[in-house]
Length: 243
Ligand SMILES: NC(=O)c1ccc[n+]([C@@H]2O[C@H](COP(=O)([O-])OP(=O)(O)OC[C@H]3O[C@@H](n4cnc5c(N)ncnc54)[C@H](O)[C@@H]3O)[C@@H](O)[C@H]2O)c1
Image 1 (tube, rainbow, N blue to C red):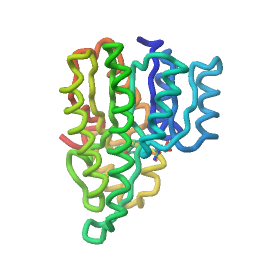
Image 2 (cartoon, rainbow, N blue to C red):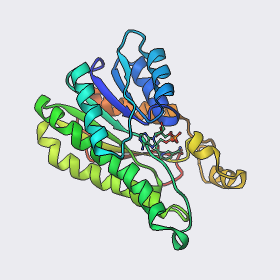
Image 3 (cartoon, rainbow, N blue to C red):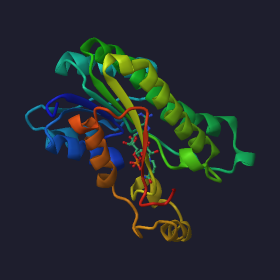
Image 4 (tube, rainbow, N blue to C red):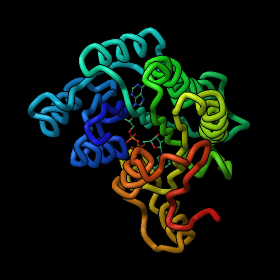
């Protein structure tokens, strides 16, 4: 399995980049997806100079684009063993002032993109009668958060989607699990005011923010033989912030 093919979305930076580094080191063939073609190509060349890691730029919120990417990956690498739906974004604002457009953006990208990729990859996994789907949710999808109603709904939706997919595809040897990170230091969290960051740190029993590799290790585990009897679960990776 460690030379099977895994698609990682949102691979160009942050948690997705950390996941890609971890999986490349573990010997997986990787298809890296994100919108930024240059960054993606540079990472692919660094992680897989022999062609075992390749870049597939595109927009996960466009189903036709997603179908094109999955077709290209299938043609290039053959069967697809793993799918890591990691790409995501925030569009924060108070619920009472949220425009329909700002409500829709995280729903379309985070939840819609996860559905599109899973929908496009599932037939390939079903034919192979093996597959691992790993969806990156968030603790916010479990707790909700003031100023993040749209993001929270998209991440809670991902958990419900994961459980439904686990139930539909389990008989074909496919597992589907969610990972719910807490506060991981990336570009996404760098913009938060220092005050907010200090309050959040105070709520973390392990007294440090997470790093991309904290999430990447759990993803690698979920792709491993040891995790073959785990499906429909949400693994929280948050230093104990939510219990
Ligand atoms: N950083 C955290 O504290 C944290 C906590 C919980 C969950 N998460 C989740 O982890 C995932 C990664 O977060 P991050 O902090 O690394 O974010 P990030 O902003 O650093 O990276 C996001 C990645 O997603 C890609 N992306 C965004 N929209 C896309 C689109 N429409 N099409 C293709 N690619 C797109 C970007 O190109 C980028 O590669 C996200 O789903 C996020 O919601 C992050």
